[in-house]
Length: 314
Image 1 (tube, rainbow, N blue to C red):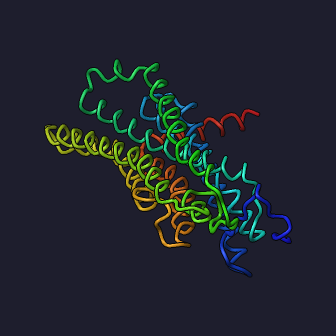
Image 2: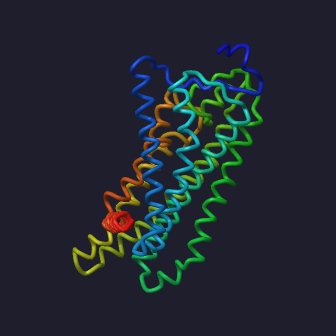
Image 3: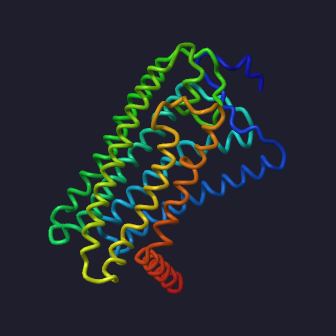
């Protein structure tokens, strides 16, 4: 493609990864497999929560909401990654680029808030067991889940709108999707002020939620240590272990990339780190919640048994 002739003020070029030959084919097939498995794993959790009465609890409701957001989160970037791996440098319109930027960050911040709500749910279940079902009623669950989406999509308006207003002198984005840091490097003006605002908005949301989660788990730890038996302690910790693992994965990548000044990382590292938080984390989350959770395993066996029974009758 003649990019010099086709690239205008209304478009960008996604550079993708500079790999060729057999490595390019292997990278494409590996990415496609991970993407499809991510979709299947998260869809499985949503179906199980809806189909199995044993999973009709607030904890699994929020896990299913997380899986639903992960479906859209990974789908906001994986198709462009697959396209660049298959075709190399790819043209993307500025409208599609900024929509992708907004949706990706909205879903990422929604997940950030949702992890805080899930920690609150575990805190109430362990520290306020007598009042848990009254405090976490079906209406409250829906309100909290809806609030995370409203908060995430509202907060992402700030970095997206500031980025849209930048004048761009360069058009090749050194990434496989439109993200803050690589886009800011293309601007004709000094973006230090924009980077500070981006870091403040994303940093405050990330750090405040992380502090909230730490505080809630501090309360959980104090309550668990007061339990009379080791078996009770182990059971209480087992209900939190999957969530703590997901929190660790999410915040490790978030702090690495976004807390501070977006755009301050060495050029070329963004797309490598992005593979962790945009592709691998959504892939690992359903595995963490299924492999380390007896109730989910029992639900899988129950649903599989029902499917076999239906097939035999037909």
